Image (cartoon, rainbow over all chains, first blue to last red; front, side, top):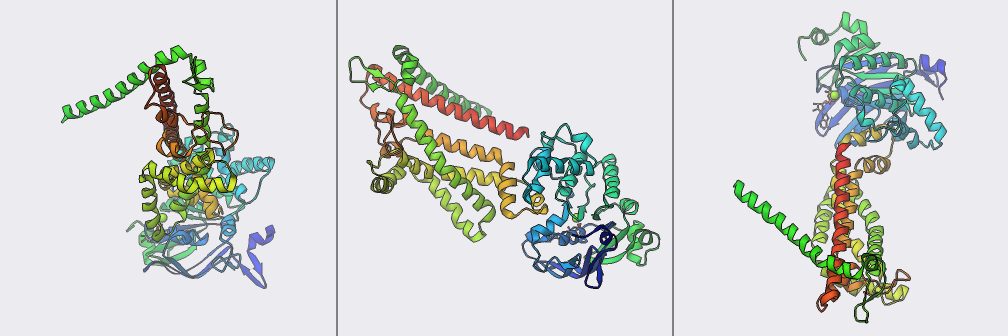
Length: 266
Length: 278
Ligand SMILES: Nc1ncnc2c1ncn2[C@@H]1O[C@H](COP(=O)(O)OP(=O)(O)O)[C@@H](O)[C@H]1O
Ligand SMILES: [Mg+2]
């Protein structure tokens, strides 16, 4: 296990220090269509990395290479490397253990059609937790972490489908946290939500970055500017610009980035 | 056009009313004469004795055993097949499997009965003893008969699910197996339950295949290798020559069967309603 000091500064292997994720020269093809072109990016622990860009530019595709959800897309090929704590996730790593370490929250909240409790307990059960008392603890702590315990503690046995959209999305965050991941990937987690729920999720992300590495896709530039430490701008499968969020927004180096964030296209 | 539809609907409803009226008009007097309790729970069926005895308890038990047996055999296989067809089967194989299940559904029940007599019954007789015409034989054959129903209804229930459940499960580190069986199956439970209850209805009402292989003894069975009579086989065996109260008792058996089927249909409606409410 990684101790906390190392988590702060990155993971050491040999004499090298690695960021949480290091993506090198990543190409991705859907059949003959190249969706990602030679992407390089480092994502640091305890930071929020935001990915922006017009729709269809490959943000979701990039995010899904980090936990290999692209594996289920037929005809999808990846080359280059994606290092998680210095180990290539495409180099024979157990994909289920990878996804345990790298949780994901989807654009549309997708709770299972079962109770709140069973939604949260699903992940821990998947990874071998059987004891009722232990599961109870995990359910409570995960819901607390997702700042939704107070709203749901009396409805644990009720169907998750009866919750509001914003509650469902926070439930999905709690469900992802329940397997104790290192990284949380979020693909436009607030695009289906009202402003109040969006605010809650943004606040939550700020809170969670103290313990997790967060990578968030957003089509909302104000959101990226508000909550992220680093921002990457994608265009047509290329990472055009990547750096500290204030620099990307205040003094973009690339003309295309500037055009995009000033709303001249996209 | 409106009038045509209205007329057709009227004819349809009239048919149902007439069937119900016919069955119950004939059976109520008979049951009155025999006594409801005696009729349903007595295991004595001796229409040729004086005084005659008309109890269909054995046939109800027979129907229950054969139905349970068929479900025990057909449902697990059918559900596994449905999972295979919907989530495992490679496309070229699916192109072969799908028509095969449709063919299985279209085979006339007398062919299933013949298959039971010629293939299943001898195997049971040679390996387990008895005459081969037994609860077990009927359960196996009927278990096969309900496969197409269980498979196709469950398969479409699985296919109708949004992909988000599967993705959500995988993103938590679940294997394909766990995602299919522990996430998608519960998510599709109302469709899957419906498939089982439809299979149940088919078994309870099946006549031709059953009468050929179930042994048709009017005694209570001691084991799965004994023959029994189901309500359907009972009616078809005796209706041809029965007269008077004997005939009335057989029609009353049909009424009991009718109530069973009605109950099963209510069950399906309840499951569907609950599925929609979610
Ligand atoms: N499963 C797929 N098969 C083929 N092409 C895809 C698939 N998913 C996405 N694409 C294509 O890849 C490009 C990037 O898509 P995506 O990553 O979803 O973009 P974004 O999330 O930035 O809107 C788009 O042109 C899209 O049409
Ligand atoms: Mg997207």
